[in-house]
Length: 632
Figure (cartoon, rainbow, N blue to C red):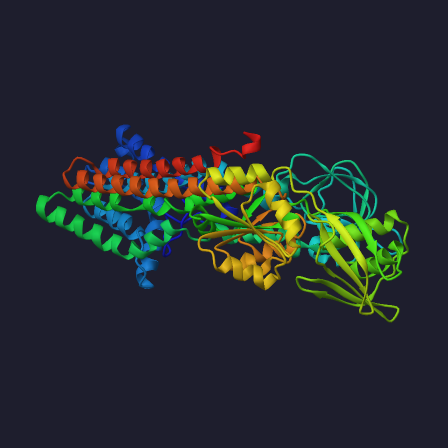
């Protein structure tokens, strides 16, 4: 089973995702089966009358002693771990539901019901493995991610030789050799070579991406057809895939509201069920009824109601290149009624093109691009990319400026050969709908650069889909000029917009909205991502920052993942509610039937595990039933 509640053996024995791998080949599974085999083996001894082997030592009761001996061994193998965990809980003054089954097993033994004790022990521990098998498909994407990255790589030595090193031994700045078919083992930048890269594991994107010199690559992606030399940027736990693994492991341990409800009332379960069992015994005088109450009263299915759907949803999201930091964020997302979006790199492609250069005060277009590119070198901002691309196209020699400083929400400033150069957001009064950048040289105006960033083709479809989900209040918030923001809002279908906003002004606008989802690029939107109820980062361009800032990261920048995620979150919450009600009803009915003598202890164990398996099966539907709209 999944959840670990106050040291509960039966309901948390396999709470760590890493032990799901090859679970049915584990020594624990072999032990459970071996313990179960002692039950039929004991009856075989009984019916084949092996009493003659022991003569008269047992006064004619040899068969019964042999049978009970084999059953006792079965109880010891399968029941002892449960009893051991229950005793640990008692010694640490922690109430856990293992105590119910432990008391039931002890009561069976005290009552001479060795068969019932053995069967209950076997069914209860085997049930946890059955539940893992039913829910394993929901975790497939997570397990693939955990297993993907290699442990070593070929590093190019100074003498030109290759040396195989462990990932943790590789140093930042070293050159790693990656051949066709290899999994890229580190985050870095290609220094030599080109290839098609399969990024499906990280982004969910099925089409390979062409990569050449100067392009970044991520650990966990696959070099399909080329020879690469890559300068190491990050490796191991610090790489993109390493951080994703860490986030998913944390998400596995996060708690949705259903789990918190169970935690709140967990301390009452054991005393209540023990009291009901005691009253049943006193009123009916039938120990079997009391034992059955203890068995069916164990709220395993109730404990599974929240965590299993959350794990299934997180796994389904990971399969599509969405990293969710925890089930609680999906719960919040299911309730949002308002959405706000950054413009550049979110609603737009994030790859603006320079359409026009307007020199002033006697300066030339070449001069403007030369000094602008000098301070933009090394910047990750989309405008910097457009300026540098134009410089290459105009064959302008780019000199790297010194003392470069970012002016948050405005632009960048640096020193070029003793001259101060600024490239900052300008006020567009010449070409409405374009982004305007002012280029300033030693305090004087050198000219304007006008750019256009195309709205993503999927933006309008995403907005329409969000409206169909009841999220009708949407805003576009940007530091760009009002005309460019208005144009992007009109093309995407977003009704409200605000331009010329500094980062803190964006954050203040977000804080004024309640139940808000904010979507940004994860770089200059950090304050707004944190201020929103749910922050979703478009992570492909700035994954490292996005992974640290947002609650959810879209690794492939597909806007249609946003409405898909809203539907997934609502599906998860719906399934949690169904599970909670269903498991509670099953437990109550089973307890009532047990008090009436209509369920034996063995039948109670079967009903108990059937309820748990049913909850897990329903939870698996979270991962299996939804598709992204554009793929449906």
